[in-house]
Length: 240
Image 1 (cartoon, rainbow, N blue to C red):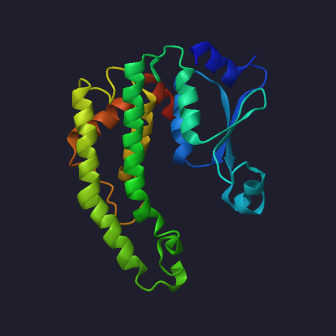
Image 2 (image 1 turned 180 degrees about the vertical axis):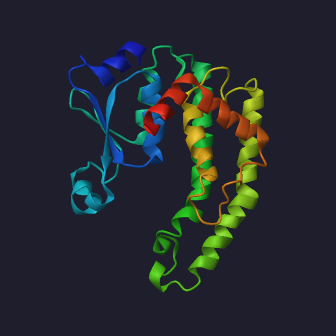
Image 3 (image 1 turned 135 degrees about the horizontal axis):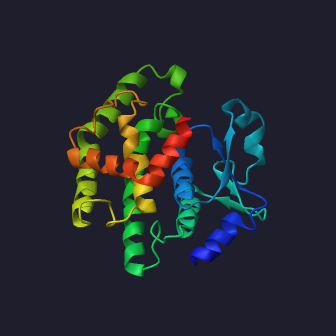
């Protein structure tokens, strides 16, 4: 898809703005928001109230999940990674999702590594929310729940997080020391920034806010992403 075709899909004639619907949190929609902002694509960021989700909104979605993106022509886009790629395609500078096949392959492989990190963490996260899906009793009946949750999350921080931070550190070095896929920020960096940055937010029990500080190359990398002028501008707009 060309840059022009992607922008036509996302912007149309400019009369009807793109609509992105998700909960009023960062979550899986945040990389899409950042990429759209970098690509200078205007959009309505529609926050869904959690209390309305199960009572009304969930039944109106195509697959029972969000985010959902409605294009100016009324077409529906589902799946956050599809949205991220489309936003990357629309970058006027052609840097977010480069057209060159070898460069794009590197972006795709790096997106896969970010997804692998998420998949490795997810059991430790979701066992505390939906223990029945992992063969445990319901949360209110699970007397050993806190012990199991602490064990899984502590093991992740001790073993798996360092393993993946090593992989990402190697990618940074192989790419010249700035971003994961080279000199330019790509959608892989946006996804990695959100995925890795989660672990320094202190939002999950037994995952210390300082758990990334033992990886100085990663901390410096996150700082470079945040310092990108358009990422910084997006962050500033949210802070208002």
